[in-house]
Length: 543
Image (cartoon, rainbow, N blue to C red; front, side):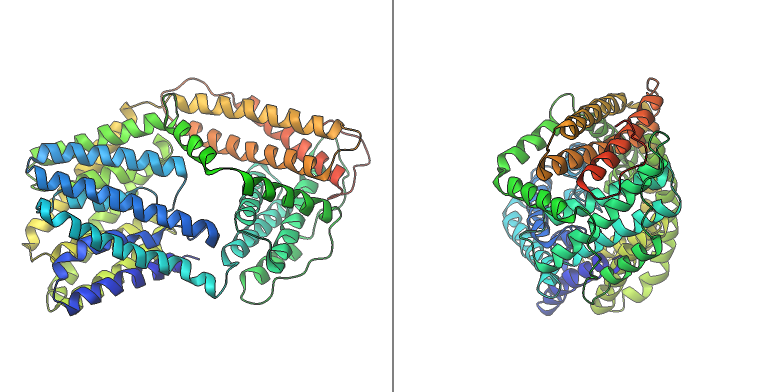
C-alpha cells in the first residue's frame, strides 16, 4: 500500500494549490499545505476508525498552527520562537506516541508548525490562515476516507493478508523472530476487524481467514513446545500465502474450509465487539491521560525532544542562521523509540538531507520558470518522498528536502546560495545536537515499562490458565482470555525491543522475558486446543 499515502497527499495538495494559482495567491500555499499533509495519516486503519483519526489529526494540526501563528505575530524574538518550537515538538511527539497515530508520526506536525513560527505574520491574518488550513484538512479527510465508497473493507483485507503471510513465515521457519512477527500481525488483524464496524459477509470471511492464521500459529507453538510435542500437523504455508494473495487482490475474499472451533471463535469476537460498542469514549480519554501523566515512559522521550530541539535551534541561531526551524525539525525527526534507533535515523537523515540539497540545486532554475513548474516539482517530490520513505528512510529524505525548500519559493524567491548553505548547516547542527541530547537524556523508564509488561503478561497468562481450568468455559471467556494474553505478549515484545536499544540503564530481565514468552505461547496453544482450533497433543503439556 506504499502508493496510497503518496497518491493521497498529491491529490490533497494539488486541489488547493491549483485553486490558489487560479486566484493568484500562491503565497498562501504554506497554510493549505498544513492541512494537505494530514492526508498522510490513517491509511493502515479501517475506514470507521480512519474517519475519526484523520479528523483528530486535522484538529491537532489547526491547533498547532494556531499556537505557531499567534506566537509569530506577537514576538519577533528568535530565542522565544525557538523555545515555542521545542515545546510544540515535544508535545507533538508525546501525543503521537500516546495515541500511536502514524506513520508518519509527529515529524509532519513539527515540520509545519516550526516553519510557521518563522513566517512573517500579523495577528489579524491568523483567522484567515487557519481557515485555509482547516479547508485543506477537510479535503484531506475526504481523500483519505473517500475510497470506502469503492472498497470499504480494503484496510481489513490488507491486515488479514499480513496475518496470513506472517503465519506462513512462522510455519515455514519457526523461531523467536518469526513467532513475534506472526503474533503481532494476527493481533493487529483482529484489532482491525473489531474496530471496522458492523460485521459484513466480507468481514466474516476475513475473520475465518484470521482464525486459520491463528490456528497455524498456535499449532506451530504447540509443536515447538518441548513439553507438549506432536500436535496436529501445521497448516500448509503455501495455502496461507495463496489466501493472502487472493485477499489483497480486488476479487472476492477466498472461502477457507471450516476450521475446527471457528464458530466458537467468531462467537467470542461478536461478544468482544459488543463490549467495545458499550465502552465509553471517556475510558479512552482516561487511558490517554494516564500515558501522559507523571511516571509515564513517554516523559523521558518528551524531555529528549524538548532539550534536543531547543539546543539545536539555539546553536543554529548562534551560527548565524536567521530562521533555524530546519535544525529543530532535523533534531525532532531523529527521536525514535530508543537511542540505537535514533542513532541510525540520524545517519540516514543527514545523508538524505545533504543529497536532497543537491537535488534542490539541480531543479531550482527550472522551478523558477513559472508557478505551474513550481507546483509540479512540489507534487513530484511529495509523491517521491512518501513512496520511498517507508522503504528506505534516507532515500525518502532526498525527496523531502527539495520539497521543503521549494515551498519557500511560493512566498518569494530567495538567494539559492543562502538557502542551500542554511539548510546544510541546520542539518548538521540538528543531527549532531539532537543525537547528543538523545545520549545524555537517559530513559531508565524503558526498563520499568518492560517490568510492568512482564507482570501484565504473567497476570494475563494466569487468567487464561484459570479460564482453561473451568469445567465448562464459555467460548467468549476463552476467547477473551486468549486475546488478552496475545495483547500482553505483543506489548511485552515491544517493551523488550525498546529497552534493548536504550543506553545507560540497569540490566534487563532477558531470561524472564524469554520464559514468559515461551510460557505464554504454550498457554495460547492450550487455549486454542480447548477451543478446537487445533488438534490436541498426544501428550499432556503444562500451560
